[in-house]
Length: 52
Image 1 (cartoon, one colour):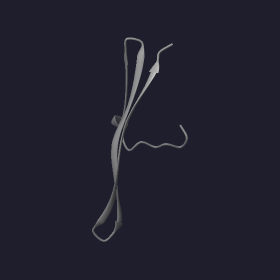
Image 2 (cartoon, one colour):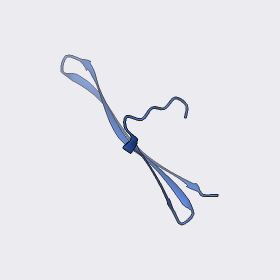
Image 3 (cartoon, rainbow, N blue to C red):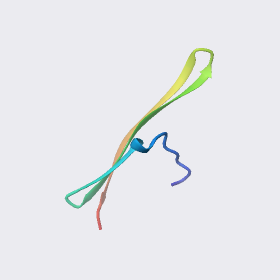
């Protein structure tokens, strides 16, 4: 999907309940910047779609 790479398989949870599909993305990534400074990105989002 648009060159999106998740850090691990548990970052995306998909579940179906009463005809609605829920997609939950939840992860954080930490990358070194310089010396003892890191950058951290935390992403949390939930999407809903009506099941066919």
